[in-house]
Every structure is written in structure tokens, then in C-alpha cells.
Length: 420
Image (cartoon, rainbow, N blue to C red; front, side):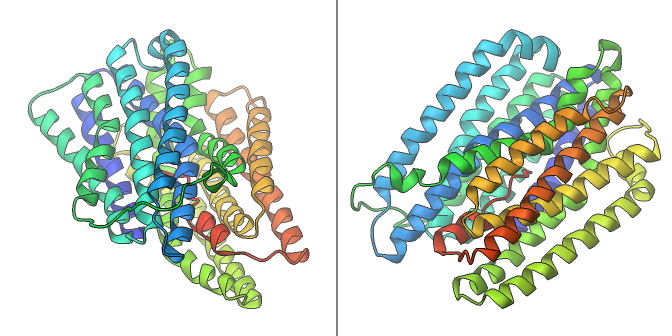
């Protein structure tokens, strides 16, 4: 899983570089990055909880020797309902999306629709693979998705394609292809079993969905908010700012991949009831997170401009690098706290904490007049507010004697809202 995340992350940067180089209009570049951030708000935001609950339910059934096909049927109906609801919203907002977000490209709207369908399918399939213990194939979905996207982008660029809509389609198409490729070798993946009541796949879905949507929005909100608050003359600035956000959150993405490898050890300690060792391990994890975040804040103003030139010739002030890397570091700490709170059955705390983060983000938008400064301060405020809430929640849950179980540990270790 960690390796798959790393490959997917690298492929995301390469894809945007290729697509940006193929497009002649900076407004088209901005439109493509807007689709990118909208997609990775909607996809993990609305479908990661479905993946978590499917995996948890299948893992539980696997331990009892029961078939999970009824769980998948229930989950497919649930996921399909979410897809339908999202598509109705997309259709209702389509004129606004096309004119304000997509530079009048209706093909980008098709790309968004394809992304909703494609990523919902991928998340459901990933839940089946991880819940069935097929972790090699699970990680492969990440890496193959990124690889297919890069391969198709290289092909399009080599053929001289300069339509932003074509590159937009490449955001939503690869997930389904990657899932089909990763699952092609799996045998005996699903078999029939006892009927699955709705409660089996929705026990914590509400709180997980609330937290997932809010956290996914916060991590992708910077470029979206900058675009919403900008004027038409600032299209180039907003496009370059999207690349700046991607550069400044490289430490966050890399650490999420490393964290995916570290969390199972903490999960084993918690499942064995070794809470003293769990606390010690978690404190070490937080120190590591804080150290990586601090290193990012110090180093990004120096190396960030070099990374930014991978995408654009645009320039930014040192302040922009400092604030965005600080927001990424705070979000890193927040993710670690949230996962620990989920493991201790604090799902309601996590949902409430991310909602408070959104309120803080909204307040932060009024903290300055400069377009980029207000967005950067808002990101810092949102992440800091969530970190405080989750730190209090963790202390409260530990003081109350809360103990993790297999289900909560599974949900915690798969709570990874940043993709790719």
C-alpha cells in the first residue's frame, strides 16, 4: 500500500506536468487543475468511507469463514445511491462549473462525471481487496492507476493533443482500468454467505462520511478557494498557485505513504491490549510527524522554487512557501491524531473536529485582503483547529479507558484522505 501510494503520487505530478506542457492556454491549465482538486475532494471525501466499511465488514466475515458477496451487493447499492446524488448535484451546477471552474469546457464536465463513476468503482473494489486480505493487489490499484494516466497523457501529448477536455477525461478513466488490471489474477475473491443487514455496512458510515468529506475538502480547498475569490485577470496566478500547493504538500504525501507502513505495528499493539506500548509508539509517531512538518517548513522556501519550476515559471514570495508548508505540516499532525481517535471509537469526535476545521477555514478567509494570503491563512487555521480538537479527543478517549477492536483499527489504518 505504501509503495502504491508513492508511485501514484509521483505519477500525479508527472501527469500534471505533461498535461500542462501540452496546453497552450494558461486558463486551460487552471481549469484542469480545478478539475483535479475537485475530483480528489469528491473521490476520497464521499467514497473512502464506503471503502473503509466494506473492508471492515469483509475482514470480519473472513475471520469467521463467511462469504462476503451479500456485503458487496449492499455496498454497491449504497455507493450507487451516492453516485446518483452527486451526479444530480453536478448536473444542477453544470453551468456554473463550466463557466467558473472549467474555462467553458463542457468536456471537462464529462471528465468530472467520469471521475465520480470511476473513483466510486475503484474505492468499492479497493474495499473488497483489502477486506479480503489481497493487499498486493490493493496497492497495485494505486500504482497502476497512476501509470495508466501517465502513459495515456504521454500518448496524447506525442500525438499533439492540446484539448484540455481530453486530459480531463484521463483523470477519471484510469481508476476503473487499474482495478480491472489488479483484480484480474484474483481467484475466490468473493463467495456467497449470510444475508447482510444494512447495519453491517453502515455502523459508523455517517460519522466517517462527515469526517471524510470535510477533511478531503480542507486538503484540496486552497486552489478551489483561490479560484472562487479571484478575478478573470488572475487566471495565471490561480493556475500557478495550484502547482505551488502541490509542491508544498509533497512532505504530507510522502509521510502518508510512510505512515501506511507504520500504522500496522501500532494496530497490532492496540489489538493485543498493549496500551502502554501503543501510547509510546503513538508519541513517537507524533514526534516524527512534527519533525517532518518542521523540516518541510524550513526547507520548502529553499527547495520549493526548484520544484515549482517543474511545472511553471511563476514565482511566489517566501511567505507563500512558509504558510503552505506549515498548513501541510499541521494537516499531517491532524491526520495522525484523527486515526488514533478513530481507533479508540471516537468517530463522532473526528466528524465534529473536521467540521470545526471547516468553520475555522471559513473564518481564516477574512483574515487578510491579499488573495493568496487569505487562502494560506485559512488553510493554517483549519488544520490547527482540527489538530487541537483531536488532541483533546485522544486525551479524553484514553482517560476514559477506551479500547480499540479489530473493526476500529481497520477503519483507522485505512483513513488516508489524501489522493494521490
